[in-house]
Amino acid sequence: MKNLISPSLLAADKTRLGEEIKLVESLGAEYIHWDVMDGKFVPNKSYTSEQVREFAKTHKMVNDVHIMVVDPEIEGPEFIDAGADLVTFHIEAVDFDKAKVTAIIDDFHRRGCKAGLSLKPNTKVESVLPYLDKLELILVMSVEPGLGGQKFIPSALEKIKVLREYIDSHHLNCLIEVDGGVNGETGKLCREAGADILVAGSYLFGHEDIAERIKTLR
Ligand code: DX5
Ligand code: ZN
Image (cartoon, rainbow, N blue to C red; front, side, top):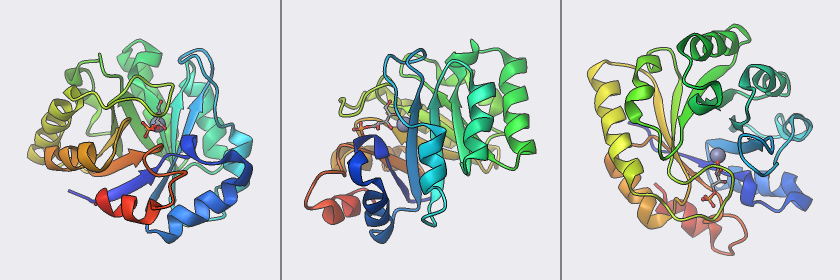
């Protein structure tokens, strides 16, 4: 099990993104989480491939791009070209179509990018198990995707436990990431359940004591 942090730029000050990125890197974050929304899979819009391209090479963290979009087979490659190291798409976006999920993972790999798959709070964990041997990351949503600052949904913890057990017993290399409502308390529960990477947005950005807050996520 790893002990990694991926601050979510959704909560960062967009008028000084470069500084926000440098700040979390200096505080030891290993990943940086870019939320991409298309206004269709979720109602809001967020980061574009141009923004990822502008900042992807200005730091050494893993560019962890979470695409909440209806057409991951098209948008995924755009973000890979822009400098994503890891692109995570939603199983719901392709209607749980096994051939599509597999084709997208294979395509990301052919393009030299790591592949992640995400599931929403109401999606059963069993639906992602068949892909864990092909994936570098599985992303458990602990809020409904689309918005920062929501309350952690505890049923995510049971999913993390099931995934941890499956990954370890099958000796797989897939990392478990959790996203939504993560703070010092819920983060600890996620670690205990077996999460490798904690995503946190509103808990970190915009707070004077961000350095202390990051420590509480370890
Ligand atoms: C929600 C995004 C999250 C979001 C988390 O759709 O995927 O990455 O930034 O925000 P917090 O940490 O504020 O719940
Ligand atoms: Zn996210």
